[in-house]
Image (cartoon, rainbow, N blue to C red; front, side, top):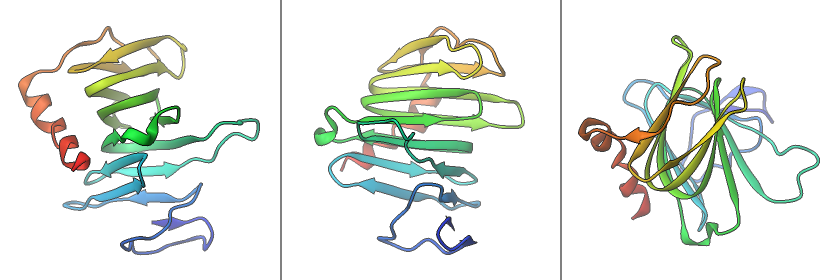
Length: 171
């Protein structure tokens, strides 16, 4: 974890607090779980990098924001999440999560990102074109470079097997 407070990389520890502008990086065979009690659970998979972004100064409602620079993350919202907002961005898209289980992947080498939804819905918007699509349960979309999000399609069996791990976060 890169601590913005200490301006240094520090080992991740169980129960450690993560603040706005902190970075989380996982290596090969490493992953980390983030939990906001009764709200959200996120699992950052191996070889991933995430930045916790701070709220904009004019926002009046609580909104959790993460920026996935590279890699994969899985997440699920919990029953007390009602009315809250979670946004996960990548270099090419913003995913607005509303009461759901999901998988997001970002590949900076190809400038592509994908969003897969296990349960619920996620609104996915291209950062460049501002066009958006609604992705429902067992669907996926992709954004390539500065293009519009692709029309959502059903996930295949291999993709479902990769994202079903989000069920573990619910337990």
